[in-house]
Image 1: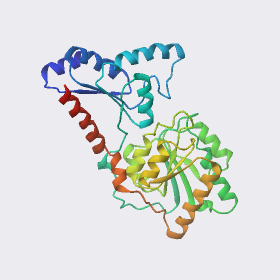
Image 2: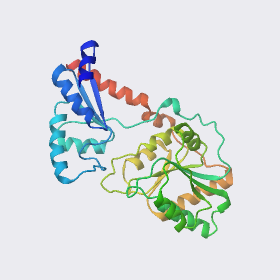
Image 3: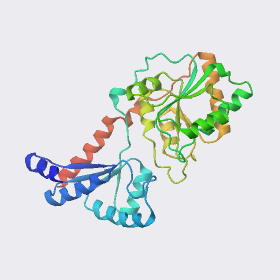
Image 4: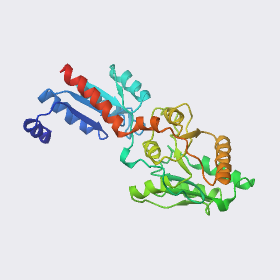
Length: 309
């Protein structure tokens, strides 16, 4: 708050944005709003007490919800990442909430001019949230396709980059896929982009929570920039991930082992026939999820607030 006070006294500031997590940013912004009376946009990339990862018990949640209501009541506008989450916030705060999805850096978007792996490579990059995401459905489908002779195990490699998961290791051993499915540990972000771009398929693990259909994992936006076909598994369907993949034609969503198996078979047969899996993403639709579009939407809100102020 002291730093904010000093900045606002020295600079000609027209408005401010606080973005969470952490929610501390909103507490600071509320205090600065009270003192300086400038327009304030509260941006919740993750929800506050409605967060699906809320780590505390019901008593604290009750107290903190009151804090959330008091704090955000001072904001001139509230923003979140999807229409489903916007509706949740609207019900709690009894006011309109703007939807500005997450996105990707357009400077990091692949030009498509990369050498793909010679194998039928499926790549996942990032952390796996135990209890929230489940890679076993993909492993089960892959095992069945190998067992029935549809897929040659010598053609396939499944790569996981990120913090190693003990549960995933157990699942790999359970399905007898240790020669095919590998965990490579944490790698630099730039290298993860390279691994995404060279892959035949990108694996997205949807949230295994029927109440969180409005939460698109940030990973999907990195994958959009990689411009390789996305296979999203898990979850319960009819959610923002499925809608985004359909809108952009950048991939497909399959929730059951049987559906995953059928889709993997199609991708593999295309790989055998063409030497690669074809990417059919619609660039004009994908660009709607770039940082440029995010900036345009924030600018529109800020302009309206400043005009009203």
